[in-house]
Length: 158
Image (cartoon, rainbow, N blue to C red; front, side, top):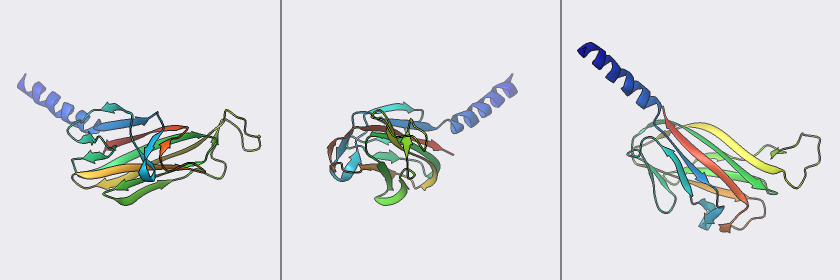
């Protein structure tokens, strides 16, 4: 009986390590100075002791290690780009391809409902107590206020 319990405990530790994930949603389109995204919702956080969402929108990652960062942002009528900063240093930059639109084929004329998108999956090394923030820009939009866009960012510890 003791061996089964130890095996189950070991298996649980492996599964928990694989599921150290968090995801933040940006639905309101609110950006602060220099285009910093202020996250609206923390949709999942299986390790709240590791991923800490700060009131100003920064994300503090307590444990050092290799992480998978995934993101996607969508904007109406404007080509978006995003930059992820780690401890105030540019870590990930993403912009759409030349067309970059969702909802139509390459040769089609875009229609009013089409969206521009940018998405990325990157692997980054984050030091202990690393601070992440994300800046969003889109062609012709002001650097702060409300923008017609939304998106998400997720982290998974590897």
